[in-house]
Image (cartoon, rainbow, N blue to C red):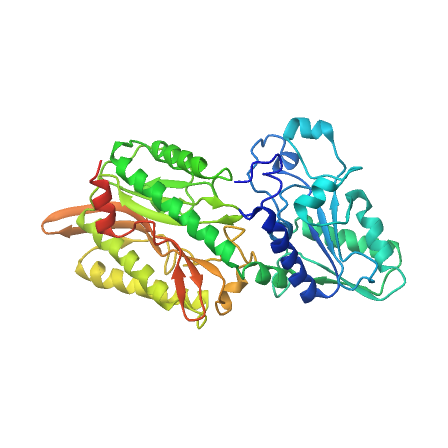
Length: 461
């Protein structure tokens, strides 16, 4: 772990001094793709700035692209990549806010612009560092008197009907204003959002190792939890144990807010109350992940709080586990997530009909065919890729890391061997898959999930 005063504002991904060349290589790759003046921004405001009542700050709050290119985790930062600059001019410039001792007194050490930039240059590996208040001035001076392109990112879907109006979009509008004000009609603003997420999601071995190591920790935490589970009486008991263990393993803590949903609550997809009593006969659905360095893990597991699945629970759980295995078998560069979706939900609905409905089980689901997508991209963001999910139509690519999370949610009533079973059941099982040239590699095999494994672990108090 990086234990310097800058350990939260610069994420070295466990590489120490080797982090700078890695980030430099990433910047070079993007510059080679864009071949024009490229500007990358961090968020300008925190949640506390936007909502005065919000006093929670996540450990990572950086734009994923800025984090990918620099490792910097702080607000009000900008990066210029200028591959077409003259030989005597810098090809990359980092813009930082001026040093503010009063702010650092309240919130800790920051990377900043000051009379001495040795620390900032050493940490980031970027030699040219400037005051962020001069960013507009630099852009105008760079674009004056010549025909040029300027590359930035903002999130807009392919038919251009949906736009996320965040700080990147606001900066696009600000650029348009600057170009008009300074009479620069020959400058074209190019959106590189698609290029940037494709570059980011081609994960290198260090990123893959982070996911593998994170899932080893998830497996250790899950095993500890299962051994203690029968002593827990509330969702809060479980959530407190889960989140406490995550914090013990990683100073960057959770990938997202943990879900601990028992019984009927497990039929709520993004349930986060985590505060109700647990019926001793119910299933508990967990959805959680630890952040290791800059990478996120995302795991779901479902278990019986009693330590034993009843017959109905066992049938439903095995259907989802079989589905998950089927998805893992089919995940490869030959298919898209849309293809995997059809494989997933066709199989689940067929098995529900064959194993339950045809045998008299009443199955009431709050959806007709599919409750959610079976997969999403995973990396620097928990749900990575374009925010509209258009990447799901593309063939999977080697280096992508995706989730594999089939599930079923509803009320099931059935007589089995003369005994009546009727309960709300939510089952989701989720792993993280690395797409390879020929198929996929499961990065979360250390997290127990078979019925035998779960029951065996829970029997060992």
